[in-house]
Length: 351
Image (cartoon, rainbow, N blue to C red; front, side, top):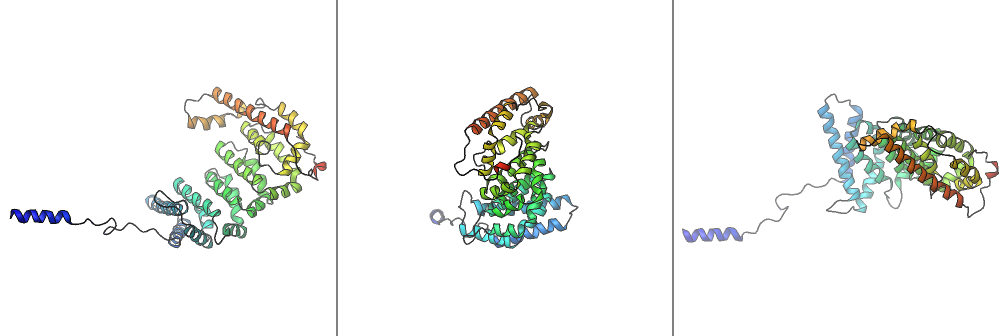
């Protein structure tokens, strides 16, 4: 019996262990078509139903968040695998052919923050994915320009603005989208959005405005050649001459302190160089700024509880003076390499 026991033990020790995954298969990843199909189903569910049961609603949102996270992994890769170009192309194709972006934009206000972030990451990435060497997202946005209007108007709702903003900037990478906004009445709304007392909203709107006016130089130059009069009047009246420090700081950095400014903007700045330098010389924080600093303070206190208002004022003054010095230096050395802007003699902008 003892010998048999030893043989039995020896036999046990010699048995090869099963390789990982032989009996326990890892969960197979869904295909792009499967992912898009399930996302479409859940987005339609969220749009059709005002689910009274909070637990059920959260369950559906959690499912959506996981699906978008899985899409994001396909697009960006993870610690175990790199993104596969063919898979990215397939996902892009079925996403736009299925009109998922429209469903997503309409449904985004119904999602929680985590699901919004995951969905936005995916939608922005898909804007730059190519299918057969073509940006099909550009074609889609041209055929669905009304979605651009929805995104721009989203800045009017603080609850959704910070989700729509990054998505809008992702769309502006397409020239057709930038042209659509520049030629629409909605462009004027940015002069109001940037003045918002909500610091984060105003900063996000300024980032979008900057992207709009610097991404496609030929489109912006064409726009300014036809609209520079009213545009810079609005720019001066609502932004540069604003009593709000944040707004004025955004304004001077938007065009002047911007290495990617369109040539027509540079030409206008050169034509008004002396006026600008005189204007900036007397441009300081005494013009009602401190009365508007609570918006800065409220944002800062959220981040650092121990901040004092005087510290905020001091920091704001130092940052502003540094920005102003940079702007003055740039204007002083600004020059055009090409022929002057032909319509400059008509420029009646008061700087």
